[in-house]
Image (cartoon, rainbow, N blue to C red; front, top):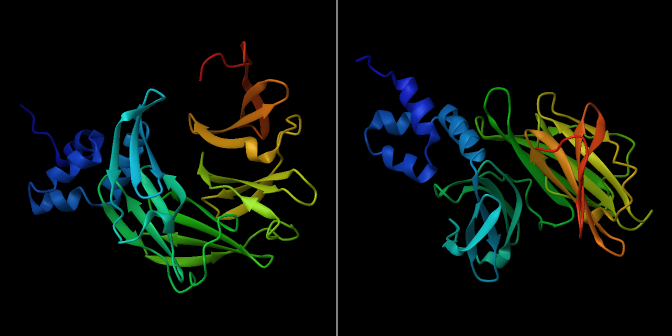
Length: 299
């Protein structure tokens, strides 16, 4: 019988297992512990687990942090579990900035802000904030996103708007350091009148919805961060959709950016549109009585 190589064992077999099971295999030997902890293996394993049908929902409650299973789109509330944050901090002092492939970027709001990369499944964590994070975290003024670059290095993007000045910085897990990035010139987006959503990764790009609820009312923008070039750009919003910005939500389907738009005009209406070839394409519309499909009957 032909001997199975180590690459086959680690990259094709063990990478398909849940993180908790992988942790048990680290006890086999020092070599296995090393191989199962490399950035390459973590990258492959998180990508495959991220495509799993079963998802998990982590939520910050008043006095606890709960994790619920989502199976085939259904929330399994009967199997809710409580997890412990690695630092002795009350949940009320925590804010979730974004999540990506099982990793969660958490802000600890104390006298000064601290950013923590946390994997609740493996219980591994890393404090990544530096001296820049000395002020209080603002829910509408701070946001971020995560991704893997072409070299499988985990990057953390942090954006801060303070007194009409926008600061964008990116963290490299491989180098354990932050770098400042250039943002768009000639825009009003750094203003405190704007509120930023969490970033969502899709097709080598991190997207943000940036909304202005004040002047002019209802203005909305989409900011795109190209992971490869590390540059920002503005995308036009679907102009035919007249709806309050707070009812717009990003999601990724088949590695393409989609937007769910929910509005109420006498009845509840929800549209799903996708961004493809520099244009927005409606996938389907939903209201109380029927679903009207467009172009793609299946996702």
